[in-house]
Image (cartoon, rainbow, N blue to C red; front, side):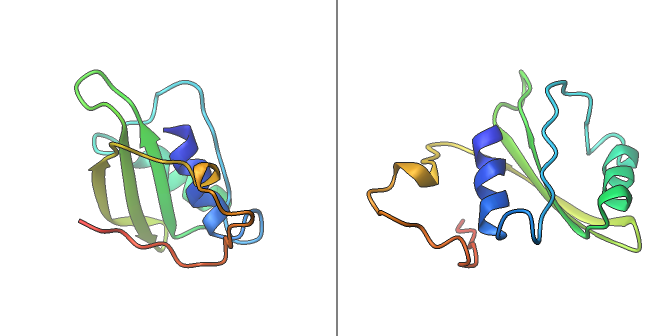
Length: 104
């Protein structure tokens, strides 16, 4: 799951427009308590977030959400399967300035 979040971070042009927080302990459960997510958003001054989680009942999940005035507007949880990292493609240089798209 860390690689998914890292690739999303690189798609947003790296350190200029995104902040990457990697935690080894899984003490953030966004759907039960949004306090930690809102606290980290205020600290980083951001309105969009991506959170990668892995639990026994919900393996390999990606949570995308948005905030307004430091309060949660909405969150969506997706299960990630058959993920191919960006560095596995046979292209010499990947343009990370492209806009990502989600297909369902």
